[in-house]
Length: 109
Length: 112
Image (cartoon, rainbow over all chains, first blue to last red):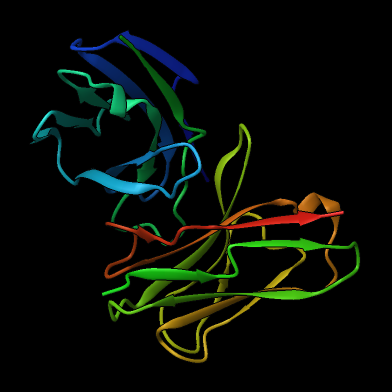
């Protein structure tokens, strides 16, 4: 089976850096995806890590360590519009995607 | 390019009624998925399809049926709706297995 864990809520101030952690236990795990979801909206894809290390996409970076069954999403120069829920989810190779319960990020002015 | 569309956007059903939710994608994706999202539960996979004519059960399939008669469409059916099926339903599609999923806008279903 698969399980994912991430914090339920993270708060930060505008302009700061925040890290959202994700730990997993799964068989046949090949990579980790991250999605963003604003209240009332649909999830949108942010990033995917197939290999260990850091992937950078603008203000967002994602990290994966398969040996530690751990990954994180790093958001820099936080903006108010980054207030949303963030989900980690298994990537390529798994027929049955599992999303974590999501982390609610609250950005304060 | 409309991406992934869902019909209807909102629906209220009485217990025992049936309905079909339609998902359509115009990206020629092989893989399609139906999720439900409840407060505090994240996204849970109901059923999925790896190609036209194929379907498979996900994490929470009970009370739902699906069909994928055409590659671009994935239908989710509720034969006898129950209040426990009150939720937001999202459809998604992807080119490869679970690499990048494109989500529809969701259907908000209330069963009274």
